[in-house]
Each structure stands twice: as C-alpha cells, then as structure tokens.
Image 1 (cartoon, rainbow, N blue to C red):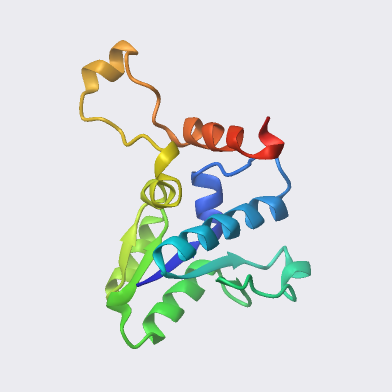
Image 2 (tube, rainbow, N blue to C red; image 1 turned 90 degrees about the vertical axis):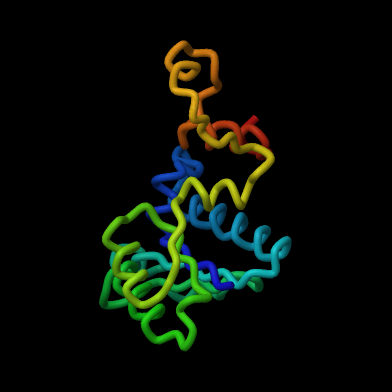
Length: 162
C-alpha cells in the first residue's frame, strides 16, 4: 500500500501543532508518517503546496518519507497527476478531508481515508473514535473526540508540549 498525504489539509484539519511555525508543523507530520511507515512497512508520500514556501523546495526527503512540494500546480492537482500516472492506483490511499480531491483520486482508482482515520493510524493509543451514543455525548459524559482535543492530547506527550 502507498499512503499519499495531502500535507496542509492534514496539518490544518488535525490541528497539528498549530501554535508552532509552519516548518515545525510540516516536520511533525513527516515524523508521524515516518513512524507509521516503520511500524506498518507502508510507503508514504506527502504533498505540500509550494507557491509561498519556495525556500523549502531544495530540502532533501526524509529517509522514510517522500516529500513533494508541488510546483506550478496545487498539491491537490499534483496528487491527482501522481495517482493517475501510477500503474496500480488501487494500492494508493489518499489521506485528505478535501471532498474534491477524494473524488478526483477515486476516479483514478485510489482509495481515500479521512484525516481522522489517518491520525488514528498514526497514534491509535491517544485517539478515541467517536461513539455512536449521541445521548451520552450530549449529556457530557463522554470525552470530546474532535481533532482539537486529540491534537492537545498528542501535544502533551511531546517534549515542547509540557
């Protein structure tokens, strides 16, 4: 399987280290993807838009994660082109909450997963799936399961989050 990640969509939707500079947020996403790749032996490719971040284009890939800064097109378009050119797009999972990108990737045979599912895969020990018991949630008896709560819990485990 090949995990293709819509970088900025994941950073913003999962609220990864929002108080940190953008470079630090990217590095954290790359670190999470590398850890997942080591555990699951899954190829990981992260796409970022580069129109305003040209200073990072010459940065070498992480040894475990392919990092692509889209040039002359959006990261979404670069992902679709990459998927469409792949010989076996059925091996690809695109991680994004962007409905258009999910639809365009599926057109070429790729599967898609939500940012919430991706974060669950990256950090299952600190992730609580939403329950189907809406009454318990309404009464306040359940822990919040939104991405903000999850990111706060993850950040507390990091050295700079204490």
